Image (cartoon, rainbow, N blue to C red):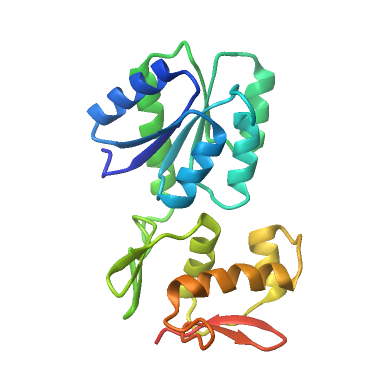
Amino acid sequence: MSMYHTILVVDDDQSIVELLRDFLENDQFHVKTACDTEQAWAILQQHSIDCIVLDIMMPGQNGFELCRRIRGDSNVPILFLSARSDDVDKIRGLTLGGDDYIVKTASPGEIVARVKAVLRRTTSRQPMERKILDYGRIQLNLTAREVLIEGGKVELTPKEYELLRLFAEHPRQVFSYEQLLAKFWEGVGDRHTIRVHLSRLREKIESDPNHPQFLINVWGVGYRFEGV
């Protein structure tokens, strides 16, 4: 059932990490691991992750804070893993955007089953979705959340990927600064925020970022994607 999904397990207890990795890999999942939230965040910037199993109580930044940070960029499924069974933590986790809450007394087999369940829910939301957006030099593999430039994979941050996907799914449609701020920054920020992110994205996908062929600025209005 894994379909080559990649799971990120985040926990400062190495014995739990290794146990979950063994069970997940036995079910043909790819597994990446992190012992704290900063290491987890670095992995998320570099790899396409399909689901996160996230411990709550860790040294430094806790799992709730990492979830809030992730939800600013991504809707990747998050399953909280906690030693506590009280409703307060469960409610807080789900309110922050968690997809499930698992007490650590659960067996590894149950945790794997919960991972499969949340992946079934999230991957079935758009059954008619196009899998590949092909614009010649640029291709987006929506299933793998990968971007290829002339056949080579380009690493994008979650927000950069979502921005590019929006434009690529709506070629030649102009998106205003206000629309982009509302969709990706909950209306918080200004035009400079958008310009900085799109400038970084152009650096990664354009042959000449100073003379872009794909992400075109519509002066005074916003941006559009030219599917050339």
